[in-house]
Image (cartoon, rainbow, N blue to C red; front, side, top):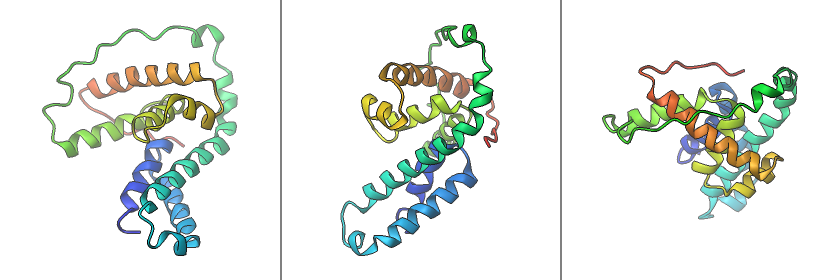
Length: 172
């Protein structure tokens, strides 16, 4: 557990963008690992199994609670949804003056500032290294929507990262 706890927690927090919920998911992951302890004890793929379980439980968590908030997102006008995102160039030197630890912290915080529909596909693509079609299948949306959300997520992430100061947003 000690060897994998950081990886499991960071996987969950990147997807759900909430430390408390990620801690609950991490606990659930390790409960499942305990149930499969005999199989995982000597397995060289235990880390991959734990990461996959963390990803799946995080996605399940989001889908359970997404319905609760869908009412508010349905209130958006259709004109607002079809407005294209403006182009935003990302400077090559955006995070170069920071240490690796500072870069990681800024990226994690910036991810928390993204809306769920952009953050989740972006994390699954860049951190979990899933292909577009697999992300679309897991999230039950079209391939085009995934590509659009990842592109817009990258633009939004760059905007958040380019701000002088990041502020933590509580997503509940």
